[in-house]
Length: 362
Ligand code: AMP
Image (cartoon, rainbow, N blue to C red; front, top):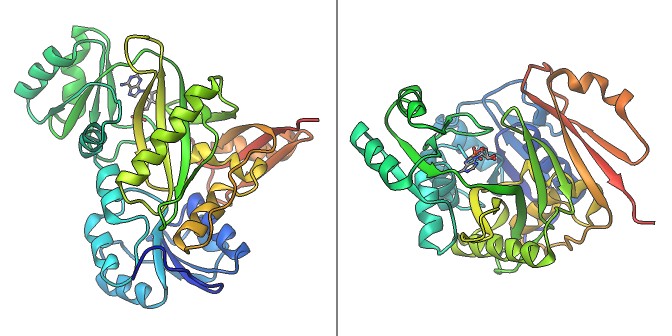
């Protein structure tokens, strides 16, 4: 089963996870004539609304996984916290793209940092923390200010504490449980950017333009393209993203987040983290690119030629969180392309949709 194997129209694509990313992947797959089957434990998953094929079961349920595998031709995922045993089990039954290694690297911050450092990619200095002794040594090595993070299940700013003075150190350590942590130097950055890159089984890569990301309440708020960076930095970011995909032997779409450092003594671009999936900071591609990130992912895993990631307009993607979604119709301006995820409950902090605010070049 080679990963560059061509998959014809009608291919059954299994997707692990049933959130908005799976929903958008499913819509893109449908446009190419593919069928998607969503596997998710939550019976209210928004992705269930766009395809009739579903399995509602736990990710550890081997019988359900085997039945799911029997009903699909290939398997992909929309989130990086797929249990590795689940990924390995499925990979034994059907081609799994991206591969399980990408998952293993992305779901553990320490593994991710070691992987990036070994690959020669510039990142913030870091040190593992498994005990109080480690923490004290790490503080000495990394220095203050720094950021303490849990190695697993950290996202949208969860599982991390800033240490700006000595007084912050022990409370941060205690708050995060004292083990399975990583201490990272605080990077003075002028902006944060991200690149979504696709890699085909043939090894071909195509990267979208970098987006400039602004966070609100530790969650992505806006992604603006073009980012306020030079073409040299933009090209460098695309190359780094493609290099990471290459080293992982990645097939599909990968998101790479960067700090653009202020301090000119360090490299201009430091990778913050990677996500082995379509990315929130790539949602703008659906409004202004010839091929968006979702179609690009489906093309890559189906062995179709990658599409042109060229951007046809300037754009700002705005996330709609919690009850902001209720005002979506009122907020629309000419040139806005809204996307509503169809989630039943607009809880605070829950991503409910986004708006792509497009500026046409006339
Ligand atoms: P993360 O969950 O690692 O993506 O971190 C969430 C946000 O915290 C990032 O987007 C940054 O704004 C900030 N942050 C995390 N790590 C660092 C760091 N080493 N230096 C500066 N800011 C950071």
